[in-house]
Amino acid sequence: MAETKFTMAPITSLLITGSMGSGKTTVLSEASDILTAQNIPHASIDVDALGTAHLPPPVQNNQLMYRNLQSVWENYARAGLTRLLLARAIEDRAELQLCRNAVSGAQIVICRLTASIKTMQDRVQNRDIGTLQNIFIARVAELNSILDRVHLEDFSLSNENRSVTDVAHEMLVRAGWLQE
Image 1 (cartoon, rainbow, N blue to C red):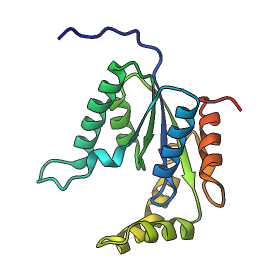
Image 2: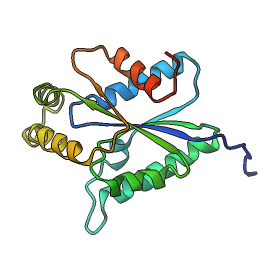
Image 3: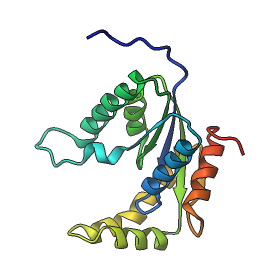
Image 4: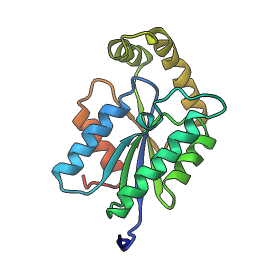
């Protein structure tokens, strides 16, 4: 099978970060819908979904998750895409570098979604109703503190008492993907 040749336009990636319950996946989906409605080619990936596994030691989920991201992104890039929406709570610069390596050559703009701790905990409580619910609820405040300290975002948006469409649209405008 012949290799398809394509001209590589600049690659841009918009990474949505935030604590659990901040709305990363919901805003990712809405941003993708907005781009689709405007006929703007892109891919959207909830990075956590690429690492959903309980692996035997010494395999580390993050390493495998980012190798999976690299494989998926390479397939999209071969199809000619140059825009990538990602959702993932990035806790440190080392993980950000794993992400950058997986989407090699991309300019990554990072948007952090915020909401009150109570709002995020309520969302997690309503969403994660199973065995690990209490652990996830407790993790909200811990992860939020980590993200406050590391401050990797280029900009932040409140995702509280706003429509998901407004948040996603503002994010895409601030990232330079849409006009006002």
